[in-house]
Length: 367
Ligand code: FNR
Image (cartoon, rainbow, N blue to C red; front, side):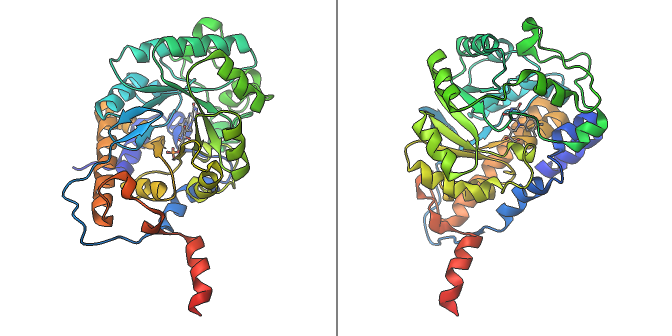
């Protein structure tokens, strides 16, 4: 049987304990944004060009100076050993086999050193800034020493979003797992709480005072370039440029933080316009198909990251599952390129798609 992303989610649901599956799948509150992250893609249509020689298609690209095989990368998702015993190690191997970048979560169930030991591969490290800045400094240094190439600084999580499934389940890590990067610092355990154990952990450890000055501070303690993950407005796009970010990730945290923010694909264009080509803009959130990748690139993204498909395929089939998802996305994206008349990423233009806003702008002239 041919496995697709959607199938993987169903298999993951069968295989995983309810608490784990719900943690991976759910979004914040009404999950309006969760649904919208997908639906907004479906409202964007193509304007394909024909009779162009598409016998050769090149989808390679460069991200922060690193050459990768495709503009599809792995987003940071926490607690991957809850999905599969090999967890982040399997993901790291699958990403490097696919020739693309993996972003490791601060809240990985494998340490930066362990993940780095999986052979060559370009890896980024996602950072949550803790109240104890000594802890942050140490962790950033360890990531740098282990060969991670960039920091993805998550800026949308001063507090954890209200994920009602986790509250109902009183979510907590299974007893055999810890937040490995923090283990030696006595911060690796998540205690049971009256609601979500993770929400309590965040309330205790994550620094709510985080502000733009800390982006500067981070630059002072590392030479790694910093991607600001969680920008969804033009205003913050400018701030990111002005504060020395190396790039922006348009993200609503997979719709797990503030509900009723727009889909990332709807916010992308204003962020790209405000960045004025000064730094690259990436996107994550609801990317499930090659057509989604194309739409994001047509709206100015330099690449995309995928979250849940990786976790679900990891649960379904470990490293082979993640390899499979990355292969499928690659093949679909290549096909979309061919059917749109594009032979390399530079061929993809804004005129290859039509958005809701375009339709509104066009209508009056047609009356
Ligand atoms: C996440 N995300 C996330 N982001 C982050 O900066 N640090 C983290 O530890 C996590 N952990 C995490 C766990 C799970 C289970 C999910 C689903 C998401 C957000 C993630 O990096 C990314 O923004 C979204 O997952 C992208 O949306 P899709 O592809 O899941 O729709």
